[in-house]
Image (cartoon, rainbow, N blue to C red; front, side, top):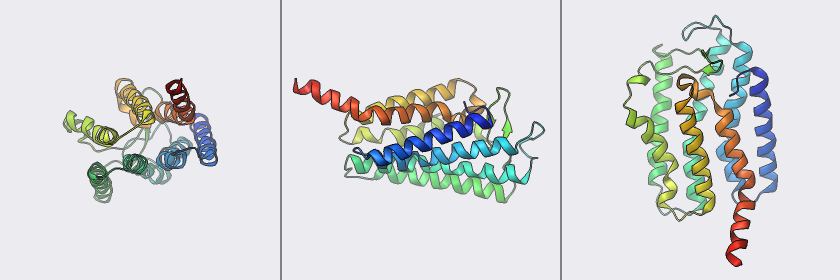
Length: 224
C-alpha cells in the first residue's frame, strides 16, 4: 500500500495518533509496543517525503540529492527486530538474551554493509517507482543471490523468540498478524514488498488496540 504522497502521510498520521493513544492508555506493555513501532512510523513518514521528491525519470543510480538522503532513512527498519526482541524479553522476563544478541549482530552487520556500500558507491541510493505503483527501495545488487533460507532465517530468529519464553495470548496474536502480513508481502508485488508498510503496520496496531479486550475476555471465560 502507501501508493502515493497522500496515502503515506495519511497512514503516518494515523500511526502517530494511535501510538499517542497507546502511550496515554498505558495498558500493560502499551509503551513497549510504541517503542517497537517507532521505526515503522518513521519509515512511513519518510515514504511520504520520498513521494514528494521522486520523479518518473529516476533510476536506481540517478536521482536528486533529496531522494538519496531520504532513501538512506530506510536503515531505521533494521532496528525493528532488535526492539521486538527487547520488548518480548522485558515483558516475559527472559532468562537468556541469546536471540536478542544474535539479531542485534545481524542487524548491525546489515547496517554496516549498506553504509560501506554507499561509501564505496557499490549500492544504488535512489528510491524509484515500481511497475505496480509502489516504491522500490535501494538494495544490494546481490540480494537475489542470497540463499532463500537466509531470507526466512532472519525473521524466524527475530520473531519466534517468544517460543523460548513463557508467553501469553498476546504474543501469539502478534505473531499470527506479523506472519500473515510478512507472507502477503512475499507473495504479492515481491520487488516492491519492502515499502508496503501500510498492510502489516495497520494489522499490528489493530492487534495492539484490541489486545487488552481479547485478554480480558479470555480471563472472563476462564473464571466462568
